[in-house]
Amino acid sequence: MNELEDISGYISKAKYNIDNGDELSEMITMVVGYLARLPKLEADAEYLYNCARGTAANLHRKESATVFREVIAEETATEQKIFKYVHRLNSNLPEILQGIRSQLSYLKEQAPRKQILDILTKVQKLSNEIEKLKRQIGEKL
Image (cartoon, rainbow, N blue to C red; front, side, top):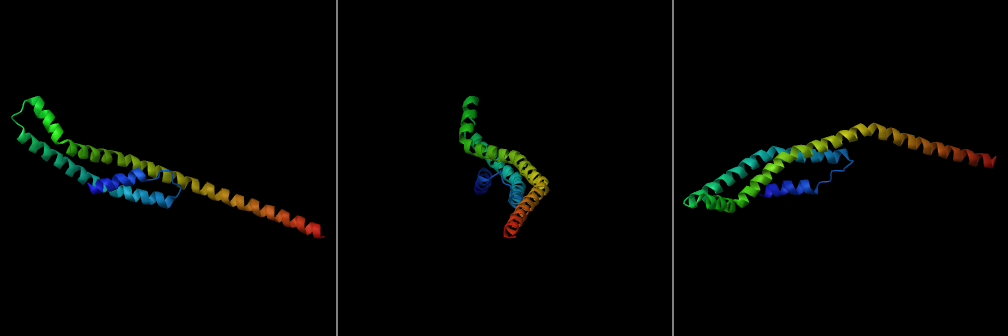
């Protein structure tokens, strides 16, 4: 359960509007690590849920069908919640990963354009400085 809380905490607190490639790469590494562990966590959660259902079924097998279903649902609510939560994480993480990868691709695509704009800005500043120096020299002559 602690690992699920760690995964959930990371995902819910992550900033997805990052313009730093290194941070995005780190996020990809984290999410891929979580994706690698989630199938086992999902299998464990499903096993615990099924065990709880089996235990509850053995205790209440003499009840009517309606009461039996309600009692089973009530007694296994926590295990079912955990199982569903892990399943949803396991289903949603690939989409989150794809979003992060798309953002990283966009940054890579924009990098050359940004470098050119930075160079042009520097050239403009230098040009302004040269004009300023020419005026100062002209005033002294």
